[in-house]
Every structure is written in C-alpha cells, then in structure tokens.
Length: 334
Ligand SMILES: NC(=O)c1ccc[n+]([C@@H]2O[C@H](COP(=O)([O-])OP(=O)(O)OC[C@H]3O[C@@H](n4cnc5c(N)ncnc54)[C@H](O)[C@@H]3O)[C@@H](O)[C@H]2O)c1
Picture (tube, rainbow, N blue to C red):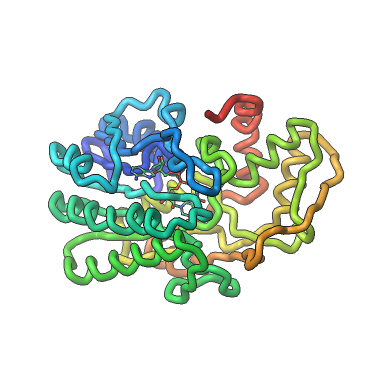
C-alpha cells in the first residue's frame, strides 16, 4: 500500500530499533514497496541481560529480520563510538525507534540515559545529513488523564512516559532552532500485529490471549475487563502514520491511535470467534494500582497535519493477524 507520493527508492533510510516490532515492520515495508531504497538498521539486539522486573533489557531479535536485504549494524544508541558507525552514510530519512520500550522499567537512570540522551545524538545525525526525523513518542506521556488524550495535556506516571515527554520537548526546541528541519514525533497508543512476539510479556494482549486460547485455556482477564478500554491500533496503520509523517504540514508530535477505544473483553471475544472456541472467560483481581482504565487518542491533529486516517478496525486487525498468531503458537520466543 502506498501511503504518500514520496518515492523512497534510492533513498538512504536509517531505522534505529529496526530489529524490534515496529522498526522491523517498517524495514519490510520499504524493502517490499521501494526495492532500491537503501535501508540501514541500527539495533543493540537482544542480550541475556534482565531488568529487575524480570524482563529482557532489549527485545530486538534476528528472527524479525529473516529475509531482510539491507544493512544491519549492531550497536547501542547510548554509545557514541557505536553511533559513529553511521558516519559513512548520508541519510535521507531517520526513523528513530530504539528505546527501552518496557513501561515497567523503574530504573530511572537507565531509562533516561537510553531514551533521552541518545535522542540528542540522533538529532545531530539528522541535522548533519539534512534528513527527515520521525521518532517514536508514546501515549504513556498522558499517564492516567481522562480520555480523550490530546497533545499538549500530558501527565506521565512512569519513567518511560516521562522520557518520551522529554523527547517531545527536545524535538520541539530543536525544531524551533532548526526551522529548515522536518521533525515529527508519533505518539503510538497500543500497537499490535506481526513481529511483536519477541517482546514476550510486553507484547500486546492480542497475541498473549490468542496463545492462551490456542493452548485450550480460557482467556484470563482482570475483573471488569469489559470496562477497561484502550485505543488498540494495528501495525499497518502505524506504518501509514510513519510514511505520512515524512511530509507533514507542520512539525510536532501527533497521536497515533484509532480514536475508537475497545475493551480487553472485546479482544478475547473476537479471538474466540476467529479461533472457533467458546471458553468462559476467567477473571482475576487487577493487581496494579493506578491502572489506566480508558485511553482514546484524539486524532484530530494527526488527521489535520499528517492526513493520518486509521483504516483497520479491531475485528479486521485480529483477522489479519490470526495466521501469524497460529504460526507462532508453540514456538519458542527466545
Ligand atoms: N508497541 C507499542 O505499542 C508502542 C507504543 C508506544 C510507543 N512505542 C515506541 O515505539 C518504539 C518501537 O516500539 P516497539 O514496540 O517496536 O518496541 P521494541 O522493543 O520491539 O523495539 C525497540 C528496539 O530498540 C532496540 N533497543 C533498545 N535499546 C537499545 C539501545 N540502547 N541501543 C540500540 N537499540 C536498542 C531493541 O533491541 C528493540 O529492537 C519504541 O520507541 C517504543 O517506545 C511503542
């Protein structure tokens, strides 16, 4: 699907975090639609290290890149000497995805160092190369504020959300100081779709519940899950947003969601319908204090300035995703 008139053929495109979920999907989008684009992935990949919450320190996985034909550089965005490996290129577009993407990492130092400090370095690369910069912000910048969440009204409730808000502020300042540059932040809501499997327990509930059901187990949800709503967005619409962000009507940070929140119960019910099962959902108490009960992206700005128009409903997204959920079922995510 072509989302804009930009011809990315022969363009040099950097994707940091390109071994992760969103980055690898973007890499394949370019490879398939613009076969002569020169795609460079920079990612530290998965190491054995764990955070104190028991989750892996990074989720980049080579299996997300099977059949990828471009350049792969293994490096850490925190490390200036690793970033110097990018000096040989002259980038036209930079999609900055690399980050600690786990919202439950509470080691503030490492989250800020990784997500904030490196952003300055990558903005410098963009400036030097006169490249378009599209970076990843997050709905976590909003914390628990009531829906709909609108740009300009943020209240992060975890180090991750704070780090993304600081990136937005850096981008805004950098834009003002460098008015010739294109710098766009995309505030994703809850993204789901192929190539998220290696995010393990931080992957979407779509794949986690899908595998529970394929294990012949009833879907397990928090009590009142029919009243816990999120703005779930399918990966294809996220790719659309990234492509359109390359030619914005103005710089800024923009919400990327559907604008139509759905419940976790809806996910379980749609999965059961698609998988032909009829288990009775099991409920258990929600252990989290301050849990977000409702998110809904106000997408009026992304529609106005990026021409972003979500196209995939939750029913359609899950239906498209089912073959991949089935393929991955029972495979190891190590
Ligand atoms: N998936 C979502 O629902 C969602 C929602 C909001 C924002 N985001 C943001 O979008 C971006 C991509 O998210 P994702 O879901 O693809 O996550 P992901 O964890 O799959 O991808 C992030 C990638 O960055 C790499 N990385 C981490 N630390 C690094 C470092 N120090 N140096 C180099 N590489 C490093 C990881 O190996 C991984 O491949 C992230 O910035 C994330 O914060 C994602």
